[in-house]
Length: 223
Length: 223
Ligand SMILES: N[C@@H](CCC(=O)N[C@@H](CS)C(=O)NCC(=O)O)C(=O)O
Ligand SMILES: N[C@@H](CCC(=O)N[C@@H](CS)C(=O)NCC(=O)O)C(=O)O
Image (cartoon, rainbow over all chains, first blue to last red):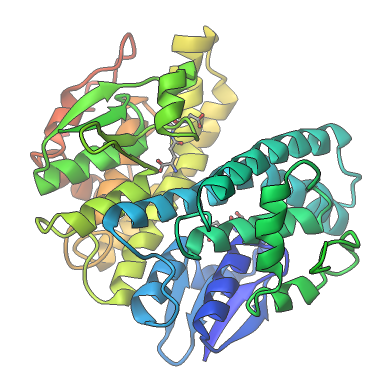
C-alpha cells in the first residue's frame, strides 16, 4: 500500500491527500517533520521535503507534489483532475503553480513559519508585522479567487480540477492558522464552503496539529 | 506565431527556449523585464512573471514554465522530453522541480538578485557573503549532478529529457553570473559540455545581457 510521508499542516501534502481521496486510492499516512532532517527521510527524497509518496513493495519513491499528482493522474482513471484540451490543462496547471508558488510565498509559507515553526520548534513569538502583511496579501489572493468564481463554475474551468484542490489545500492551512479573513469575499467563501463538505476534505478538517488550535469557524461546514 | 515573453538571464525562460529548440517550434522572442511591472504584461500573466508563451492569433497566454513545457509536450510529437513509464516520467518531473525550486532558491535566485538586479536596477554592490554562500550551495548541487551522471546516461534516465534542459537552464545562468566553480566536478562538467554544443543551446550561449559580461569559459564549447 502507498505510504504518504506528510504532516497535518503541509499544504502540498494536503493537495496530494485530496487527490488520493477524490480518486479513492488507498494509502497510509506516515507522519514526517521535514525540519528534523531525518537521514532515512533524505534517503527517500534528497530534497528533504514533504510530501513523499512511497511504495515499499515496489521500492518506488515519488517526490514533489506536482510530479506526484501527474503520476496519479496518469495511473488512475477515476475522477480526472487535469482534463480537457491542452489549453484547458495548461490553465489548470497555471493555477496550481499560482497557489503552490505565489500563495505559498505570500501567505501559507510565512504563516507556517510564524505560527507553527516558531511555536513548535523555535519557541519564539510570531512577528505581528509579518502576520499583518500575510493578511494583506491573502486579501489580494482572495480577490482573485472571487474574480475566478464570478467567471467560471470552478477555479480551473467547467469542472472540479486540480486547481480547486491546490487552492483548497493552501486556503485550509492558512485558515487553520487564523490567516484568512473571509469578510468581503462572498464568492470565495461560497466556493470554499461547498468544498468543505466533500468527503475527500472532511478528514483533513477534522485533524489537529499538536497544541496549535484553529479558529472555531475552521471545520464548520456552515461557516 | 508564438511570442515568448522573456529576458536573457531568466532560467525558466531558458528552459522553455530549449524545449522550443529541441522540438523545432517556431517562435519570436519578446523582451520583458518583469521587475518593471508593466500593466500589459500583468494582463497576460496575473503573476507578473516570465516566461509567458503567447499566441496573439488565438488569444492564448500560457504561464508558468512547467505548465508551458507540459503543453508543448502534449501538442508536439517531435523530440519527446517527458517519456517512459509513469514512474520514469515522475522521476523526470522530480528533477525539474529540484532545479526550478531548490537550485533556484539556493543558487540562481540569489545570484540574479546580487549580480543582475543590484547592478541594473538597484545600483548597489553585491553582498560577498551571499555570493560565498551561493558558491557553497552550488558545490552541493554539482555533487548531486556528479552522482546522477555516474549512474545514468542523462540526468533523468536513459535519454535526454526535460530534466537535462531544466538543469542546463539554471546552470547556464549561474555560470554566466560567475557562480559556478567546475573544479572537482568532472562528471557534471562532461555532461554540461556535451550539452553546450547542442543546436538548441548555442543561441542562448551567444546572447549577452546589457553590461553584464560572463566569464571567458562561459560560451566556450571546449571548456
Ligand atoms: N515543490 C514541493 C514543495 C514541498 C515543500 O516545500 N514542503 C515543505 C513543507 S510544507 C518542506 O518540506 N519544507 C522543508 C524544507 O524545504 O527543507 C512540493 O510541491 O512537494
Ligand atoms: N514558476 C515560475 C517561476 C517564474 C519566475 O520566478 N520568473 C522570474 C524571473 S526568472 C520572475 O518573473 N520574477 C518576478 C516576480 O516574481 O515578480 C515558472 O516556472 O515560470
